[in-house]
Length: 179
Image (cartoon, rainbow, N blue to C red; front, top):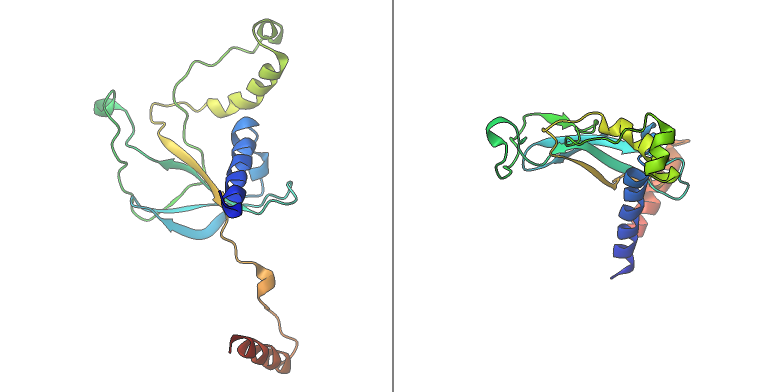
C-alpha cells in the first residue's frame, strides 16, 4: 500500500472515529454550506464544508448528510429488496442527518439501575449517543458521507497588488517559469 493510500485511509479512520465513536458533532459547529456542487446519477448535491479547527493538523472536510441510497422501505416497498432512489431535480442541500432505523432504545433515565446493567463508560456513551437516535423512521436509508475537502490553497494566489509594476513583474516571473 502506497504512502498516499495509507494517508487517505488514516484520514477516513480518523474521521470515522470522530463521528461514530464519540457521537459528538460539536466539530461541525463552524460548518458552512460548500460552494461545490457534486453531480450524482440521481441528482446534484451540495454539502457542508467543515473546518477542523479543534484538530490542529487536520485539513477541512466536506460533509454530505442524509444522502438517499435507496427508495424508502415503506408501504408497498416494505419487506422487498431495495430499489434505487428516485432522482431529484435541482440541487439537494445535504446539511441534515437522515432518520435512523427504528430500534428499541435502552432506558437510562434511572442511572443507578442502568449502572447495574452496564459499565459506567457505556452509560456515558449512551448519554451522548441517544439524542442522535431520537429521530427514527422506517424511511432510514440515508448515507452520511465525509471526504477531504477540495479547497484551493489561497497562499498560491496573490489577490492584492501594490502597484501595476508589481503585477507586471510577478506575471513576467510566472511566464519565465513556465517557458
